[in-house]
Amino acid sequence: MDQQSEVSGYMEPGGKNATLVYILYLANIIVPFTAIVGVIFAYLNRGKGSAWVDSHYTYQIRTFWIGLLFGIVSGLLTLVLIGFLMLIAVLVWMIVRCIKGLQLAGRNEPVPNPETWMV
Image (cartoon, rainbow, N blue to C red; front, side, top):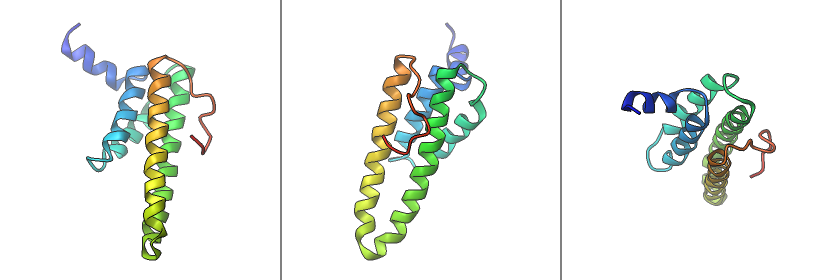
């Protein structure tokens, strides 16, 4: 397999791309804005792959928007100090969702309930 076909596998709808999106979300902890690239991949590829991959894209899109919403609320609440605890909770929530998604994607399994707010 040449390098170009290997790279294109990560850009096309499928398990490799879903895994890449989870990795970009996790990398966002250290390198800001990688989650934006991840959610763009998820939006571009949703509806183009198999059903199990689409469940991951839906899960990833919801993870991004829910995480962003609670991240903003937590950021605003840092003024009254409870926001710091909420930021930690949002970070843990995001990490757990990504790890769960990575495990399911690695086994080529769908996310059981991709529209849930829970882990």
